[in-house]
Length: 239
Ligand SMILES: *Cc1c(COP(=O)(O)O)cnc(C)c1O
Image 1 (cartoon, rainbow, N blue to C red):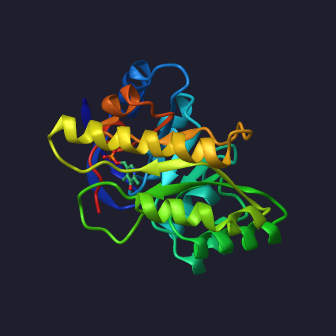
Image 2 (cartoon, protein in one colour; image 1 turned 90 degrees about the vertical axis):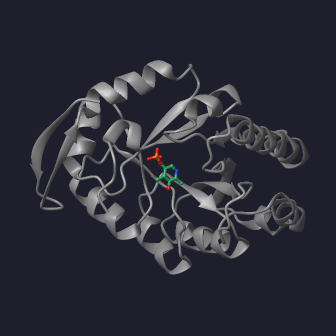
């Protein structure tokens, strides 16, 4: 990655301006047809997003409501924003008017709130259900059994303003490629199971969002339809 130093106003710090456009082209060249790129721009300034935008990228992912709000207000309106972080129910109302997809839904409570806020905005919001398979301890994401329970419960069927479009997950952050691969495979088999039971006639249930900077090539081999890549395009985040 080429780097040259620029001053970035948003964070008011000196940092390396990565060759965003070159990195983006490189990543895109490695994605087979049918796999979409969500460029994860969290903690990166507008300049970086504009560079990717100029290269044709339109889908970006953010994980904090306030940061997303600022970027949404100041950047081109044809950007499709995916919310990829843990979303508190009291924040849903702020992003409901414009967010394209909420990727990490892991409770019925959150699903209900998204439905309510989407209804207020007279729209339907696309969501993914977040699976927790990785070995890391985290409170976020549905275990396979919790996912099955949520689906079997059936209340989601009444939520007319959310559309469940598939599953999202993060693999363990490890070097062991076989472990990563087996987690993607498990996620894929759960996708197939849910698809067959509940969405066999719903073409919109088709997204498997897995793969980040360090594992997206494995993810693509294991059937990802949507990769979420930040560092490889924009360089390291400055927190
Ligand atoms: C930050 C983040 C990413 C991108 O991670 P990189 O390693 O920078 O590619 C992808 N998915 C989620 C949920 C994230 O929070």
